[in-house]
Image (cartoon, rainbow, N blue to C red; front, side):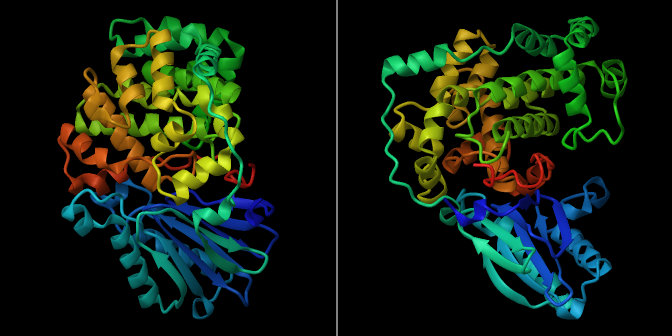
Length: 455
């Protein structure tokens, strides 16, 4: 067991920063293409971590939170450290992250999104006169930036140190066992599938269905909880379904209702095999839903409501395989996070089946629409989809963006060779990566101490 699992760990989400005094806890940021900066004033006992998405805004700086960018967020972070009693003269920094999105082409290497963010961080720290005591940036791999608040000692942790190697052996399930696993997955309730179809139908009477949601006390409570959560971000308290309809509109409310059903679905089947934190699969699903919807709106390649549902359901196959992943989690973690195997390769090697194949069987059994089946079956290889290639490509691009800019919710390692063809299908070039990265949602984690510490 890793030593990092014993401390109270608070995770700093992408596009956020946290400042604290000395206490028995640690701050940690899980970094891919994002850049993390830990700054301390050891004498004053003040420190924190800033988790930066990009070097600077790609458009109107007023449209996005300033904490997301090195050019605006890092100065805010330094000023907040001073406001808490740290002295700029005594500050020391540790910098990590900034991995490449993927080796798409020479243009992608020139674009170097993470490298540009790191360069902006180094420039600002130099101008502020803050020395860098340790720095590890670049490459293709994730890492963790940690600040022990009891000692104010920063540390850059490679993935292999979080989950030590295990000799655990996994017996591959037989075809009969796999069929049993998939057939026994509790179906998503018919009302959720009905909502999924109605979201796509402009002629549906959505108000009647909203009234039906109100009658289910469990779902109504979960819908209100999601409406008032950070990742919906209403900015006001919603106290009833009727009020939610007024604030959000019918279709958005129904999207949240489907999300609530999916949360129950993942809570029933998820045994923390694929999740790297409590509720990681669900939070990843909601993040993917929001990102797919935003990309569909921006690119105008698919109905945003359908894209939301595709993002929400794309990983349903993991529910059937989760117990096997849980049994040999260190093996899966090492293959995907240390040995750079894709998740699909690790599943095929260790289980003899992938979550996309398990998802295909579930999607067919539930009679999901073809476009959703394509998103579930082909989001790792969208060029193989005979129908729904655009939606599969959209989910593929969103998955890569989530894996690079909002790392650490769930076990994943996408094959980035599919990113280029998928972007071409959507009419995109590598130069669009920063603009798309700005759409990656923040505030998806469950909060302090979730990631890895709960395994």
